Image 1 (cartoon, rainbow, N blue to C red):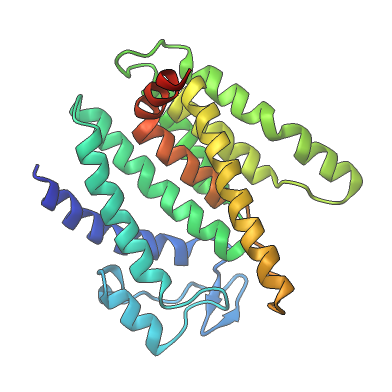
Image 2 (cartoon, rainbow, N blue to C red):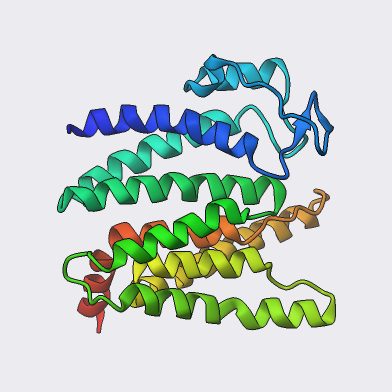
Length: 252
């Protein structure tokens, strides 16, 4: 399939991702009001389509702040860009590209859900973990145990922060982040996971500095969850691990 077709496919998948984000808990709103136990608002057919989904949100906000109509085209363009980039970077085998496109779609949804709600739903995290583990046994040029080791290390790295936070009643990191890190480890394997976590820390630190500086100028405090940083670092590591590793080797 040509690069342009993957980009177009990414746009339409982005529309589906937006619906998944709106349908995920705790996006359980009807007419802008929390409605626990109520049937979710019916989504019209045009809300599944790129660009038109933003138009629908402009007319009537689907969920409270920080949800905004700009999220819809941002998700769609992000999906299109990553679909095109993935098709360029992952050329063989074909099944691996298909699996990765499914996983990256779920990761995009998780990143935006976490940003809007500070919540990483198990209904998405656990399938990503399961598919990542199963696929890891068949990835060429990778030892069969890499997915298992990556998942175990990903879980262990952030487990102490979540555990201590619970004991002190001062959450340092959510359990959703711990499970997400394990899922990324299953997808990436051990070494790429470590690079992805490192990149996630760098991205998170840069954003934290920006947010802190904004507060000095009178902007309200903004809580930005850690999930989007982990996902960003993981995607970069998945697509560019070997390139970055080769560059590091030349600097040593």
